[in-house]
Amino acid sequence: MTTMVSTGLKEFVAVVESGGFTAAANDLDVSTSFVSRQVKKLEDRLDTRLLHRTTRAVRLTDMGRIFYERSREILDNLATLESEMADLQERPKGRVRITAPGFYAERYVAPALAEFTDTYPEVTIELDTRMKLVDIVAEGYDLAIRMVSPADSSLVARKVAPRRMIVCASPAYLKQHGRPKEPDELRRHNCLTLPDIHWRFAYPDSIRTVKIRGGLISDNGRSLVAAAVRGYGVVRFADYYMKEELSCGELEPILEGFEVKDAATWIVYADRHHLPTRVRFLIDFLVERLRAMDEERDDKF
Image: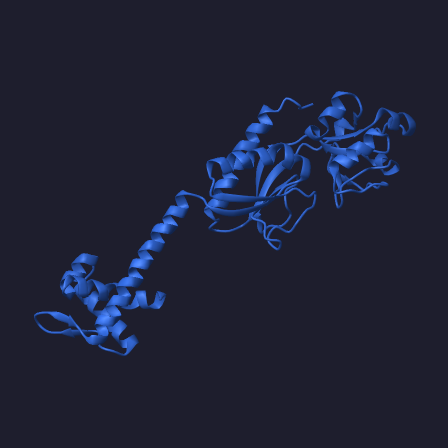
């Protein structure tokens, strides 16, 4: 189809409908010789004569008449397709798959998505809230909300908002096991953590990763917080994640002077030249809305 359009289909139809090569050239804003060459290439490709040419007029051959009817239909379909594609650029529609971590997804992402689908009802969103770092390209996700910037250079990461990370434990745990004065002392403590997560801390001269270990690893952050409240160990999450526990004193912050300043929430997606309209619109919407939600929060410590 592409080859035929490039070798005279449009020009052939213009000649038939305008009544001649000169008139077709005027309609298409090209030279008469260009129209003639394109129609000749088309006839050579088809190995058939489409037009009878005389000094006064051109007329269709029998094969030309059949070919013209199909050509007209093809060009009409192309015009319809272009119109539909332009419409898609204006009105997002279709499915978007998102992965976002549990509590943050529930408290912030889900309400923002509800607003988006209210504005664009022809978009369907599938939200995966598992606390799992997935390969968004291999597993077919359009975008991810992440608490760390991806190391994969093939992905694009847009910063949404900064996060304040807090290490904390219950008063009972700290009374029994002592309050660590620097991150390295966490090696001797029972650290409750998500799978494949490293704890980074800011020392005066560098950012260091502390190798932690503990008796409970879970992909459910709220279960880890609950265990910490019961005096089972030390946890580390963003401030908003443990708002109630910190406010009422069930958990106490520790090592506050060592928290990194570069923690943030990110929107991550594949590096493509042409993102689907629905994905592009949603990314822009989430960046704006999640930033606004962060600024409006009254639970920052």
